[in-house]
Image (cartoon, rainbow, N blue to C red; front, side, top):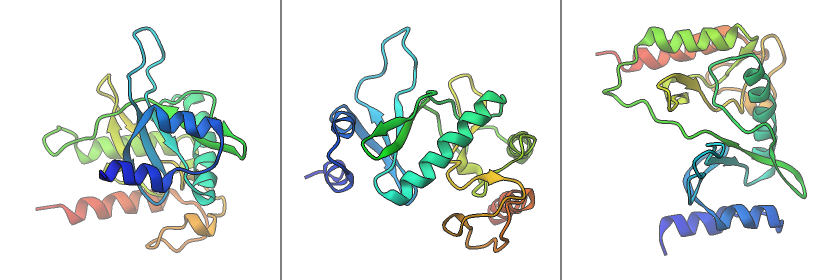
Length: 196
């Protein structure tokens, strides 16, 4: 049995037709503690909306993160922030929101010419909307099909000054309130680790 088949079997959840349909027509791209990313087996036909990536929850904790992320992305999309584009309707099953569809993005590789200042520019554009990412680092910035940088993974995000739910707190940032400073420090720490 391949790793993909094992992951699919282990992480499939619920007995809802919506979930069965998703699993039947998609493959695992990656998965982690906060979500499960799936890619449709067939890209959407020409002229259809190009949102072939599905971010889904496989447990109740992930459902809470994804529901919050969906609402944050909806708000950021309405405010022209550099965030991943998604379908305006969430994926819903018998328990509620379990995911959303989004655009396919490209990882920023080591030979991609993106400097520290460009990451900070993305971060500042998100902050201008009053949003603290709360997990900001270069792996959460990708490139869309037009070559623009976009920020992903808003499951731990919140509004500046609001209380951070315990399950969304960073192990290195012990403050109780969402703060722009936490995002800036996180990005600085990342670049300090990889300076030569």
